[in-house]
Image 1 (cartoon, rainbow, N blue to C red):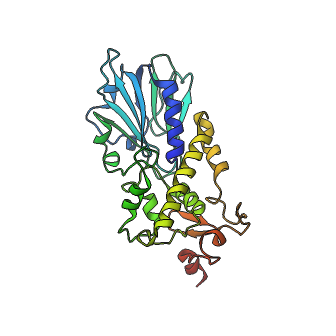
Image 2 (cartoon, rainbow, N blue to C red):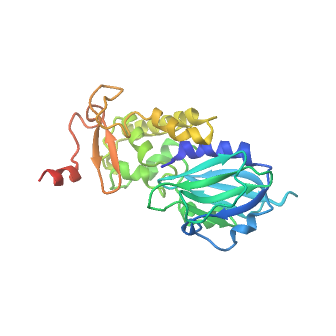
Image 3 (tube, rainbow, N blue to C red):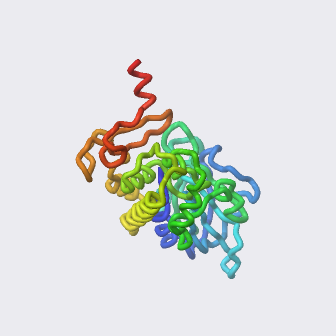
Length: 293
C-alpha cells in the first residue's frame, strides 16, 4: 500500500507533470471506482489542473477554468492496498474497455498524455471522488494531523497518545489520529524507536514519547527524501529497498543481527526485531498458535 512518503513523491511527480495542463477526458473503466456522482466526473473535463495536494494517503487534483478560477471541482483518489498510478506520455488512442484487466480509471490530457489508476487483485478498494472540495470526502474529513506539517510537535504527539489504551502499532495506523502512516512505516518507526508494537500507547513515559517522535519524524522524512525525484513507476521498488524490518521476516536485523519475526493477522502482518524491540522475547502470534494446535 502506498503510504505518506510514496504519496508525497507522487504529489511532486504529478505537480511537475500535470499543473498547467488541461483535462480532456475522465474515463472510468471499473464501475466500483467512482464513489461520488455530484458533481459528475465529466465536470472536470476542459478544466486546467492548478495544483496537486496530499491529504494523508489521499491525492487531490485541484482544477480551474484557466482564468484564475481555482475553486474546483477536485479529483481525489486513494490508492488503497493494491492500487497504483501509471503515467503515459502518450495514452492509447482507443478508450479503455470497462471490466478488462487492472485498469480502474484513465485521465486523458488535451495533449494526449495522462495517467491510469490501476488495481491488482480481486478486492477492489481503490476509490475516486469528484468533489467541490477535498474535505467533502469522508476519509479526508476525518484525518488526524499530518506528521510532516510544521505544527506537528512533540507536544502534539504526546496529546494524541495520552489516554490511548490501544497498542501503539494500531494507534500509529489510525488515520484519524495521525494521517498517512500505514502498516509498513509503523513497523519501521517502532523498530527505529526500539519499541514493542504491542506496547500500550498510554503507558509511554515522557522519554519514550520523545524517542517515538524522533523515530517517526526521521523515518518518514528519510523515506520522503529517498522517494523524491523518482518517476511513478519506480516508487514501489524504492520503498522496498528502504525498509529495514517490514516485509523481511526471517532476515537478519540490520541493527543487531537477530532474526526478524512476524505476527500474522487475518489480512495483514507486522514485522519486528525481538532484540531491538521486545527484550529478546518473541511476541505471541495467534494465527501460528492456532495452526500448531
